[in-house]
Length: 568
Image (cartoon, rainbow, N blue to C red):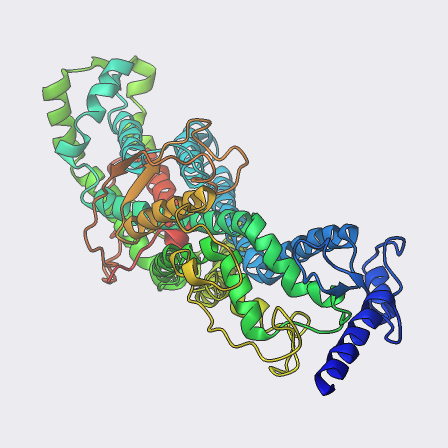
């Protein structure tokens, strides 16, 4: 009799649930308010719980969600996740964008100021003598800028060409009693390496220039590559398994009548790690890339003190010009022997060359004699730009250090945000109800998602887009490591040999895995700080003085600021 009563009571309860007898369905008012706060219409939202057998993601028990609501919440969860990733990576992406822009602007301004300073001083000091030969130096700056902005320029060949052209001009001035054809001048340039008319200065400066410009160009390319990779990877591709898990985590509490209930932190970790499994695999290569960037930054941050390097560079350049003057007879004799004897010039020309033009040996400015006019102002401006650039490199280094392990730590960053997860590990959404989340948090990376309890991840199909970004980072890391050692790798871009925008672009989207390796001479070059200035000597002809000053000022402005390299 007692058992019959129990069965009867149980049936009565079930019937009351099924047909709305004594037990009423819960109200969905809280869900309606939260749903409309998201910007959705209340048209499809029930006032009370309904049967949930129509749901595909959330629980099919009694629910406040219709199929239409679940579909909209699915899209909303996907959108919110994409925004979360972009927002969390915003600081990283902004760092690369802003620092790339600053460094690029500083370096280009440095080159422009150097060229303007050279031109202003030479026009004012040497007048027509300079303007008739200024293209030698203008071409040097043009090629340096073209190299920095991503042009296919071989620095060693370009610098060799500069010294050859300078030799041709000086040789003609030193032997102005002769007429030289283009073929003869070309023959002279072939003897540059053999004769070494400027002594060892070209070799040393070539090493300094090459190392400094390789480092600067590669560094700015690295900033741009970091920017592009971060921007691309931050735009996540939400796969169906991830979308389903996100909906269950973020919006199934709505369907359960608990719209204010946030997910447990560990639950969030498993979901986000599953959704960002491929991004986490970017992390090892990203860390190697950051390490390589820091190495090159150390080179750029080195002891570039303009006052400290001004004097030794003056000494070296004056030494080169004096060497050319001192050995002019021997150089001319060897050139005449190898290229043949040139034809004498006309009477009006030969008589005035040596006596009127070479009346003093070149002597560099002493500190108190350095110009204080517009050229002096330009030098001050160069100092300011360079020091600002130095501070910029220090700032970039700190930001780069902060970006290590960024992609593997992204789930932690998202799942510690109080806007996303609950701070109470007992009163949080655990994928089924309110309570503690018990499953362990899986490790990072694609292969570790095999046993992820929340997200279905096909570990046999890596994201090809992420793999492309890994290859991009790997190529850039190789280039940075070579730049640290003073070597260059020219990545061939089929679309354009330059950046196309006037900025230090280099390797971007057009990069391929094909590249040419170009080694540079890398002797350890120490600044010559001897007190031996260019001594005055018997006159040997005056037209070389403007060439000497030209070469000195050029190097002082363009090289001492950014090209003098202290290699340890």
